[in-house]
Image (cartoon, rainbow, N blue to C red; front, top):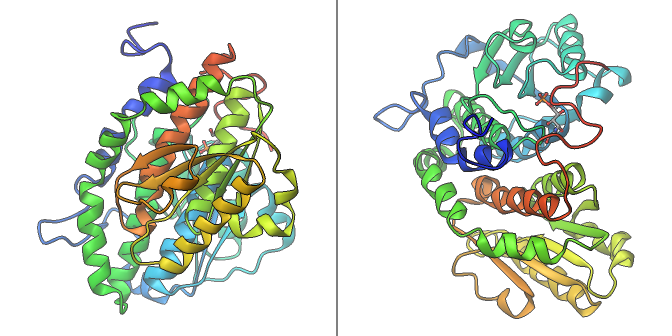
Length: 372
Ligand code: AGP
């Protein structure tokens, strides 16, 4: 009913709007007054967390994209090797797991059969499994050794939005916590990032306030057949997520690429007026990465692409190459997906509406996939 949708036309719009609160709720009670993480609820003893020699993340769809981003954070802040695998592929390749492997299963519903089978396989090998889940008492957390709940609240729309942002928050918390209990040379950075993370819901709110031009742009592209998405570093999984949203909602051909891979094949797809969304990392800090993506934008534009550039406020170097510019607030590099994903959700939702599609119930899809 309209009341359930809180005055919005679709659950998806309501859930996009709820993201600042979902993010804040997922942080609540997990950062103490001194700025340290308190994750005692994850009942894996600290001495075991100190001995973890490998992290393996298993998940499907959007949750898998959260896992891809988590890998950058975990390896950077903890120096523990981290693999991310589609849950549906995992157990069929006889993965190498041991008692010191920490397996993280990410699932909004907690009922995804592929993810459940992957975690059962991991436990049979003696690994500890930590679930990151949005649904209290669902099967995946019940069968795991420990759980960190995301507090997104119920997500009704088939296309995941607020669950994704809270999965990212939970992944950052786990990565920072592992860094905190193990002590790494990134101690100061970890402290600073915890501070930034505690402010981030306000930044998500600011992004939501500036989405009208994104909606207008989406409507203008309703007749297109293909949209490509490019990113590097954590912007790459953001590109994959932007493409997935567009496929499932707008039923358009959409693909996400690592921008560095362009020259190894995908650049052949670029033709006149093809919309290409590019997620640009912060110009501060990682300047090599930044310069490379700016030259990628120049390359595709020279070949006729219509460039839709998502760039940090104050980033002026991209302006000459952007046919459309979407601004996001400055954040630490690893946290950027929390703000960069939001315009892509709005973009896909508006395009679906413009094409007359059923936003909350896309064709052929189920909210939770309980068959293998
Ligand atoms: C996201 O928009 C999708 N509908 C889908 O990819 C989903 O993320 C996937 O099926 C995993 O679901 P889960 O998080 O409930 O395990």
